[in-house]
Length: 191
Image (cartoon, rainbow, N blue to C red):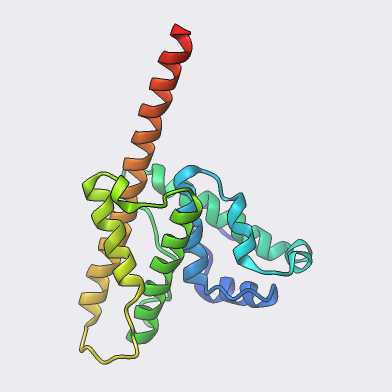
């Protein structure tokens, strides 16, 4: 598996790797889960979502490389000042219902990752971030099998909203963490 360390793995390749380790996650859910969990920079607790068979994961070096790559690229995407954060979704030439389902799955994984990172109540987030989080919950519940006469353009706009929205949530949470660390440090220095 030779791949640029700054390009997400191919959707199909990650899907195959997930199947090899008997995972119930889709490639989109897997990436969303990692992206959500990275809000606290602790992805260790999410490994239980990949599969129930830890031995398969240990034996599948390629799968472990894909997960490491996803963590690295996603973390770097959050830091990118040019907002080049990427979503791992099927290629644009995939059928619209498949791409729509994958976006819903990505959002579902992201919400799961947020919850795992310790965000239990979206109302505790600043208004902009809470609004995005609730929107992601709604997007995660979209049913692509229902004909709602959406277009490629509509889906691309929704993908862009999700892409920017998760960056907003990450930035808000990172700022809150910095502020909390500063308050803690001030109390520590006084004490």
